[in-house]
Length: 278
Image 1 (cartoon, rainbow, N blue to C red):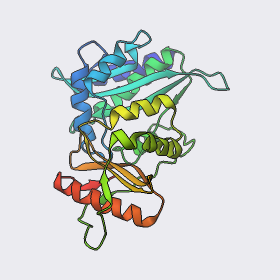
Image 2 (cartoon, helix red, strand yellow):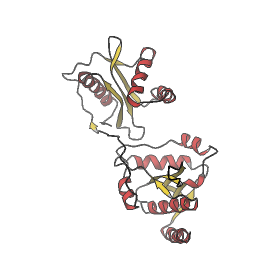
Image 3 (tube, rainbow, N blue to C red):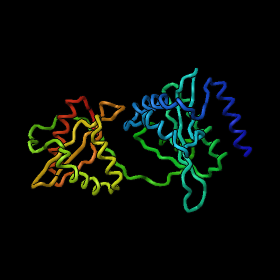
Image 4 (cartoon, one colour):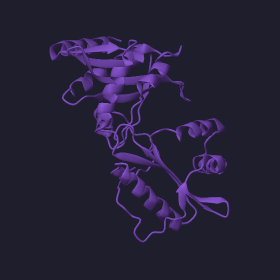
């Protein structure tokens, strides 16, 4: 449309004046995308960024569209990126896309608007009528950006996150019955608990079996009573913010077991330089 073309001309003019250059995806961008993403994510409460090897897998698939990835450069160095994806239409039949707000290095915030406008321009050219996004207060300024760019709030996703400073809690709490996870005897029973808690598919459970062997797992604890797992928790170090760790699959049949697990997990976390739990 005329609106899209005129809007892009304005963006392009400002882009030249600002010294930023925009590019769509080209092979070889993956390492820099990981670098920028991790640097930005360090400032978030919940830090996450897909690693370069996984990006290479995604970007080598036959259905990948390089025009759905946008990158900003300053003096030849990548300083930001934004990702979009064409998604399945819903009942209304309108063509849809998802958008993840830009990850941009500090002092290069002016390229946020450039990336966003370019992405929207490309999506319009592809016939997209509705753009969806996820926004979380745990991930930088996503909520503010959603409001700034006129997104309409549709629904809240139930994902409550508690942040707790780690401190030693073993004093007065019995932890002698807390032991390390033993895959040879605990795996099937533990996976049954995961499936019950999160309604996971068999395929997802197989993936989880591999993930719990990751070097980022600093503790996988179990409490057993009469050959039944009555409590378990997995402490997984955040790969970007090394001082943070996620408490995954927290499960206990009684409050006393939960206290014992957290007390033991806190001691192990402090020994490994972890300062906060998510």
